[in-house]
Image (tube, rainbow, N blue to C red; front, top):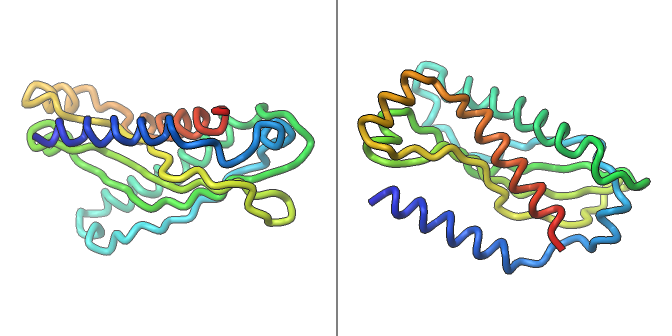
Amino acid sequence: MYKFMIVALCAAGMAACASTPNPIAAETRSGTYVTGADLVWSVDDADEQDDNGNYAAGRDDLLARLEAAVETEFAHSPAGSQPVSFSINIERYNRVNALTGNIIGGSNMVVADVSVIDEDGNVLGVYEDVTGYHASGAGIIGAIAQAATQPDIVGIMSNSFVADLRRRFDRD
């Protein structure tokens, strides 16, 4: 049931993204270069602090790797003359362990609004609900396989987020 809901949510999100125009004109985007990314943690996660530090460690790892992934992806493209930066406001973050994700359902997910800001502090545009995720859901065998292989969930989420941001940034 949860797998179906996740697939439906992702499909609805992709359909919505496909019909949403780019908030920044193509000529403006091509005239910029990205100087960096600032991350803001806006997640209400007070209830998540009781898992022996795993949540906090995962959050800190995600923040560091997400910032690095965004800066690496946009280091050389676009290559215009106007400096801009990304302000990434993380609004949702969900972590599930291998057993929960595969047996009950769920995904490791990060969702953020990304503002593109020029050197004068003006917001050129906002990409809403940029998403990175690692989906689970292969049952008992999936839980065993995930526990055995220890996939780099934070890396997968970061790369997924950057791919979504790049796709939206480049879309006309």
